Amino acid sequence: MELLTANDLCCSYGTKSVLHDISFSINSGTITGLLGPSGAGKTTLVNLLTGQLKPDKGVITQAVPSPAAGVMMDDLGLYERLTVWDNLALFAELYRVSRKRIEPLLIKTGLIHAKKQTVSSLSKGMRNRVNFCRALLKDIQILYLDEPTSGLDPATTEKIHELILEERKKGTAVFLTTHNMYEAQKLCDNILLLNNGTIIEQGKPEDICLKYNQKNVMTLTLKNGKKLVFPNAPAYAAHVARLIQEEQITSIHSSEPTLEQVFLHLTGRSLL
Image (cartoon, rainbow, N blue to C red; front, side, top):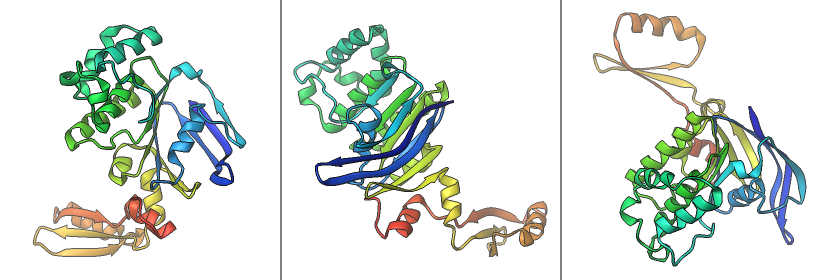
């Protein structure tokens, strides 16, 4: 089900144009990743989608009401003098949901030990996790995540990834921004590559990588240690099939570029 459609969105700050003719859609039960370097316009686009900014031009059509959206951004207001628990308890009351939802989220995000700490004492990464818990407190159909694992250690990043995948399994549409190529390829069903305020490519990660597969070869490693390189073409399929049938192959490696390499090819710059 299509939950959100953006058509020809444009946005500027004063005389500076930030986003140009942005069009895409978000479907339920999918993760859409907005991938681009710092300053590309990712956060501005999230602000448009969540109603915090209005576009200069274009239309956003949503199939769900605003209360059915969860938002995690690092500049969303938390109450500095309140503890982590008290912040989430306050939002649970505002969202009219049970406080029983709080503790499982704190455990899953690795914050249970910090529940009595004031927000003012937290690191940026810990604040991000509190905002992530806040976004998941209520029943949602769309989840917006702006750099959800920024500043997190690998173990906590993995926990956040698990929570994101859980939301997709529930049927939630997830829209996340990142400049982490590994994160995008691991999590996302669809990718939007953003550069200088323009979507330069979009689609499934594997389809994008295949599209720009200039070498288009596969490397076969045999049991005797030899490596064979074949063009990735139908003419060689029978030969490869015979080697597989004879159980001579230990691994097959294709030559698809990474999203990072595709972005570099299209723009001449890296994602970082």
